[in-house]
Image (tube, rainbow, N blue to C red; front, side, top):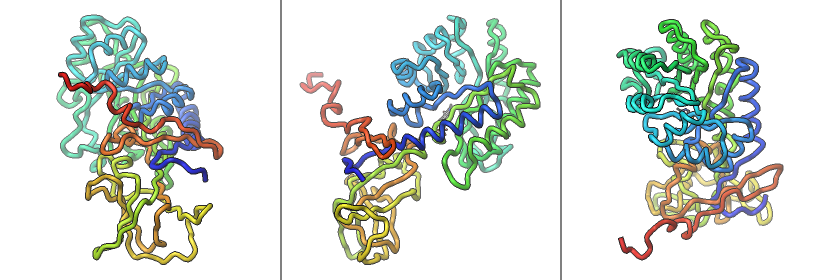
Length: 400
Ligand SMILES: *Cc1c(COP(=O)(O)O)cnc(C)c1O
């Protein structure tokens, strides 16, 4: 293994491409009239965004900055979502062929000002998904906060406002955030798309079913399972000839191919146990501090080689793996009954691409290096941030 500067992220290109190919084939097989909008917020590393663009995917963005980034990187198609779009980019999007899924009342006011020149307008639906899939949604009983409520009539109100403006609804947007990422969720979303079409006599050009899928995990649903279920439900009222299916994957594509590599820098034995200090941090792979375990492997340094099964190292009952930050809670996991870790060994965390890099803080140490691995070759695709990047745009004379 090549010596990489740690801590670092490594993106395995082949795995990324396998995920992309599986998604495309699942869509082609089930709903050949489709569009993929990659969710920028899940991981907006420029290199990864460019891979998505090369795959023919469009940009799914939820802020002015993300919108500007998509334009900067040359994405020709943008799907603009979220409750807090900026007015400047909202209007730009409508004039430049974007798909804009409305999620706030002020957007209807903005729309009244300019109309739609070139883009397409959809309405995000808020409905009681928890009632259909109990225990599965992220907000649970408190209910989701995105979109216009079907139950209270706000969705119909928004639809009527569009009609009064002479604007035809182009699409229905249904993204939901769930704990289970189950196939049943997508059946429920597709059923809702059917219900809305029938109840309001709509002819949508697209149904945007959102993101939130699993990808690259054993014993979990995969793209073909989701897309088949979506097709089965949509068929009750839609055809691929008339209506495009839009999906907005993030995690399912970008989580599996990314690893985070750390090196052991010190080991301490206290009367409470053995602490293994590494140059990585929990902030880099669990910035929301919500995970309780990590896919990982231990690579023991045997001079010129690394092995997962070292010879001659004592088995240690408990070793607490810690990060570099000066926070007591920067502890990653406890290795139980594993060979003794020593300085120079590596701990590699797997499947850490989603909601990490773009949530990684500039805390104590700046952004780590990112490498891409392709056929055993490693290329640096983002250099480690140093003081130079950190102070950019700051007033260093402190004159303000
Ligand atoms: C976050 C988000 C996604 C992507 O979700 P993943 O869980 O990363 O697949 C897609 N669409 C919208 C509107 C989102 O907010």
